[in-house]
Image 1 (cartoon, rainbow, N blue to C red):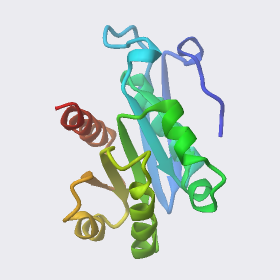
Image 2: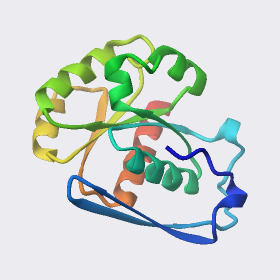
Image 3: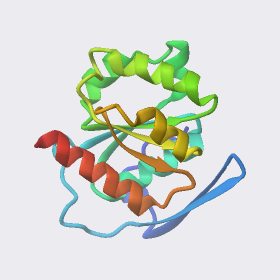
Image 4: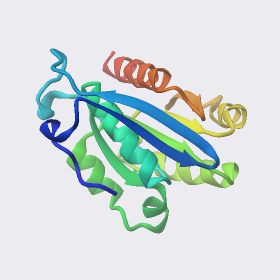
Length: 172
């Protein structure tokens, strides 16, 4: 995964495009002076967990373009235990977790339940992304910690709105 780019290193306009599971995800990223860009210490933190390094990097760029601090982790690192979840959450203090629910869905849901029971995550709102939105909604239907399910392929503005709603609900 590429290192973090500072605001000064991004071009004025760039296009991000990745292919994941035969689906091409494209996003236009613009760099302009924005009054809502706050210093890193005061920006809301979005923790992104996905199985695709390319999609993690694209989402990180997009969320940071919209005033968030985005921190990333690979789902496989969580499963293997090579990512210290407690240290990750303690260090970054995310406001919301965006998690990609991948096949096999029932087994991944059981793993996600295990993660969310962890003391570091039990009070955080979750947004799930999934290629099987209907099944993900069914699995999450009785779970108050899952704020929203976003199907893939997704439009970034819908994902951005879901994150803003989750942060607003968590702050209320």
